Image (cartoon, rainbow, N blue to C red; front, side):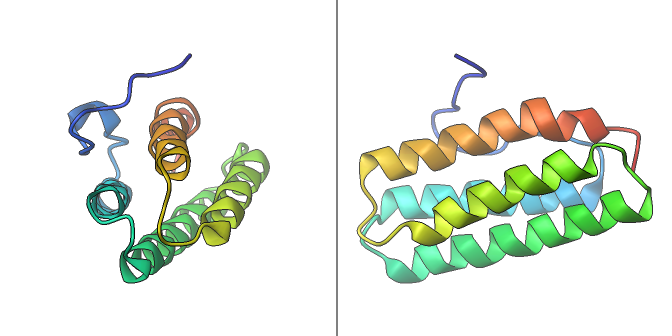
Length: 120
């Protein structure tokens, strides 16, 4: 199954990657998903989530490239796939779309992002 989805859906210390910029961005994405869940009919909140996520992915990928992180190619691919799905969502968001976002972020951070701890 994977890692449990926090309820309420908020970032906590168990998601820490120990790079302040990235931890702060992860917090923003968690908040964006939380905001969308609270108001699934808001296209503005969905758009903000997309923007925050895209900016975070760009920042994270830049750090990976600068450090010549070997896991960059598959990591970037995972980002592209998620961002594509996220951009395909429309308000009002249904439960399946929200659950997908919640689960993807938790699993991604704890399995894929954790691999770069201490390497960027």
